[in-house]
Image (cartoon, rainbow, N blue to C red; front, side):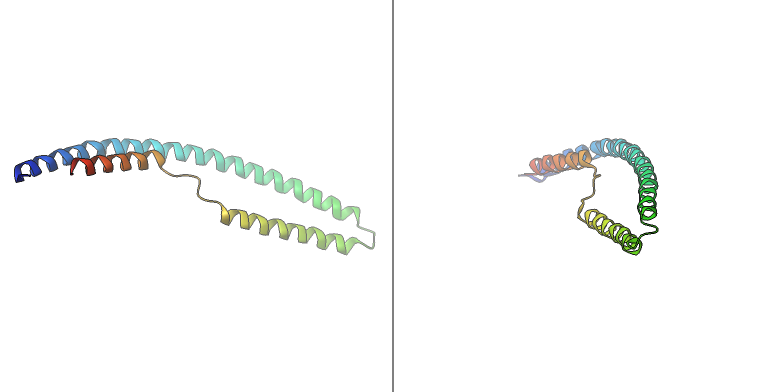
Amino acid sequence: MSIHSKVTQWGSVSRFCVERVADYSELLSTELSRMRTRLLREVIALVALAVAGLFTLSFVCVAIIASFWATPYFIHVVWAVAGGWLALSIVALLIFRVQRPVWSIEVLQEELRSDLATVKEALK
């Protein structure tokens, strides 16, 4: 292959890459906007769920403890409720550590992989 054809080939590849940069930036902007909207919705829903759940569970725990107020099992029930909360916290921590991140920029990654394959083919 001559030097002229190599320069022409590299010129074509560089033009292709420059043209795609604008597409990448637009795609990145769109995906970040979608991710931000989805994240905001999920955070609001999770905060509402957490607040409602904690209020409900705290009232249930107070009701359970109050039911055993004047009985010989009062101390056992109090410690059982505390142990249950500790176990629930440990399970939640383990589940949190096992989970993978949910969000990624998949479309942009696919486009970059596709374009890299195209560039590799063009340079053969």
